[in-house]
Image 1: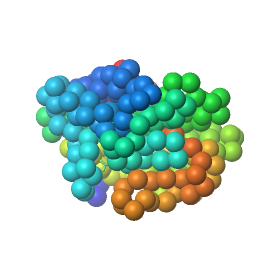
Image 2: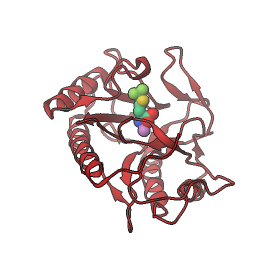
Image 3: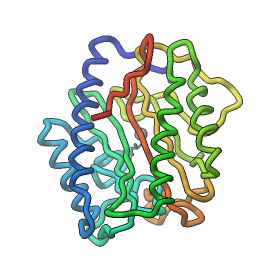
Length: 250
Ligand code: MF3
Ligand code: CO
């Protein structure tokens, strides 16, 4: 499948889809507190998405049962919201959310601390976030896709963290997952050339310990193999003639 270049009209729809998603993330961040369940977060997120006139794209995606992926502590991504999972002070939680606005998908993730968290957890979250920004310094027309991957890897490796290899970023547009795949670790080849009008979801997933992950019996929840903490940071971006536009920032 080829990488789809979006027209000016499509880019406007992507911008709006992503702007609305940024609002959802902002409200979820403000709502997080100890005592809340991950089910509560999903319910709030779905309500917000629908109130904005949009549809949650994760819900029922390949059978995923919720609108917001809630991944706590050693859970990497795709955690399933649950009434049994009560957030406690010191936890970290990755929220991955997406929506469809007039046929156009947006996708973004953030990791938040619940109340006060350890300095080590703070660093993991901030390095994961910064690795996205290091990566997208290379997200420029004329460069190559894997320049982004290599930049993320070289930044993160300096901290001794494990970069998840089993899951990658992706193109996005009229589908949640379009070509190309976007690895977060170093690549031998430079990959396809970046062209204005590409819309990409760049999403480093970083473990405090080893890179290896496992799947729980629910067939969704991805956890670190060594039980270490994991963080996730994702935005949908647009390749332009100059700097990339980060479409899902508030
Ligand atoms: N951001 C996630 C991804 O790109 C989307 C969650 S997939 C779902 O894979 F199935 F959980 F919805
Ligand atoms: Co994604």
